[in-house]
Length: 322
Image 1 (cartoon, rainbow, N blue to C red):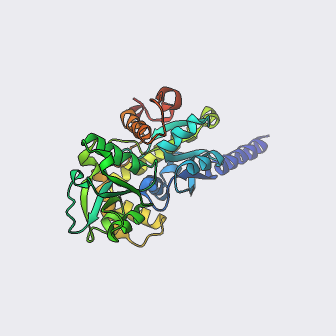
Image 2: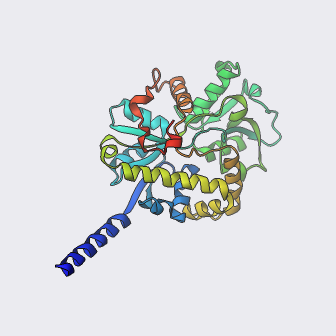
Image 3: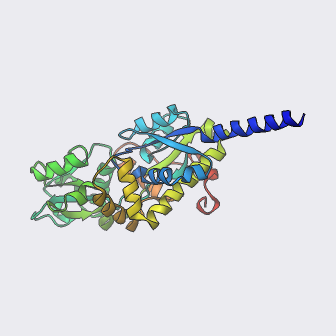
């Protein structure tokens, strides 16, 4: 009998080990080309997720928006970091989604640039000029409209041009298609020798805006609290490690993103640490309200969002849940 019990116990331990070692894939918007995913890359490399009992080994990504939400819904582990705007739109359309944590919490990294030697040096100078942004309804579309409104600039006196991605905006400035355009990391740091700042978002308006959030499905949230808590805790450890070790973290993320430009990443990470780019997971409702305000300005939202109905803070550690 004892040997049977021993074998059963050994088998149970083996099965538990297999379960705990099961590789999981999560969704992170713009993985590989933007830095929303940096805490996950660090947490995977340093074993933080494993320490918390979940083995994240893969990341499914997209170029943002609704695709990231759909990837989250379709995953075996329905957890993802997606644009707050995409999460709100999905919830408004009846998708059974819950926001369970904060992601990137500021737009202080975004600026508008001009060609070196330009006469444009402030937001007031953009009047009667062509101003580039990414796409209609995008965060940069919101930001330029909000910045003009808060600085008393008549939008009818500015020609706004949807120029495409960050790289395309830079090209548009350099070839004269627009007079100034949005920029962000790592493109800004990489092209500082050719460009000059016209204005930083953080200098012309409050930069507190929740860009991304972590989400899961209603059903998964009901019966997988331990896994969700582990994911949020592991990501937090990733953020804290970046803040304490930005150079090493930059090396980790450069490797994860298959980038050879490690020194560029190091400069970017020091910039991001200085502006507290990554939330540790707490949901700053003022920053979330700011995103909703932006969505209203570009016609993608009507009225405020009742966060009590679409968020669940039960997976956050107590010091972040208030």
